[in-house]
Image (cartoon, rainbow, N blue to C red):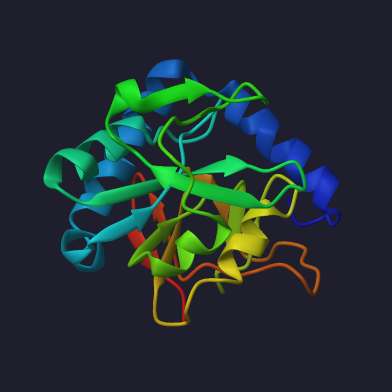
Length: 193
């Protein structure tokens, strides 16, 4: 992986690796990540948690969303706006999710606006990888970089990842935003300096 330098090449390699995993391995990883996140003090104490509904081969977040909601946390989930920014609405259980215009599940509740993420106590964001400083490699749309720009410096931002996706370095541009931690199946919470 050291010789892959462009974002597009690295994204393609990471997607290929995810696709090669078995559904059982992905499900087990999602459960381990869920359990690790549920035991993090900031998550245990959070009143509002911004998260997302996993798609495709991403580490599964559905069990995490349900557990947070059942625990009494106020969970907000994104909707992608036409300009690529993220709007947020509350998660009211699995039955509150509907298929959005891009085929992803999103909340059916009323919109809270793009700024709602700034009120979250914890923000859980998708990523294909991070490096050991927390630089995040997303899917390439910039939606979460915009959302993370609204989040205060003391707020825990965390990316659920498979074990092999915390890398020595990832390519970055000036607009890219770091996360403060990653959650992986084997190592649980990895906090970045």
